[in-house]
Length: 238
Image 1 (cartoon, one colour):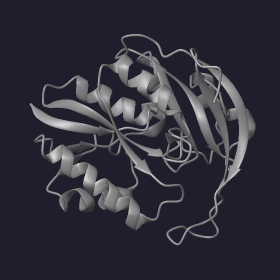
Image 2 (cartoon, rainbow, N blue to C red):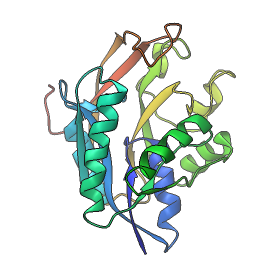
Image 3 (cartoon, one colour):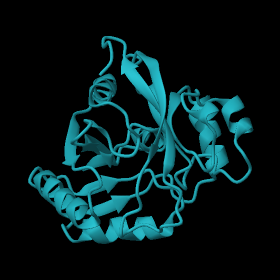
């Protein structure tokens, strides 16, 4: 079996990629690789707490390898930090990177180029799958996920904190990809067939955050997002 690591956001697409690979004897997932914001100790972009990600990794029985990035990290800093992390994985003979991307060709090419520079290959189990059918499969398989972040230009506040189920799919506007592949929303999976136990949490505050455009992003891109804070059941908040 090939040793591999899964680029892990804690969301449904990464979970489905792992779920599909778990049905094959070709790959052995050794690590969940997650980028965190050093200022807030939360998953980059998704905003999920470090403590909740640790519980999720424990529930899946996989070690969580953390990459720490400063707030508003440039692509140069991101690439350099990732390269250092990948080198440590290569020392353990882990040369395969798994991604949950579905159809963004530019993003796939970027990942392939970056990984090739450190002698690694990429695997995309969900590539070119129909995103509507994929979300249906996710729900039908028994996974449970909650929406933690939505692009305020595409979805209103009512979608933040919503459980992903068939009614969620039906409620999505027609211009929103069912899996949020264009960044319309992000999720956190808290239970399902691969879990040893469900990750218990309570919903916290919903806040709107704005991110200034960087040199790598278009100034026309809407950078306002609704975030639903998730608090582990054994915490009182932070």
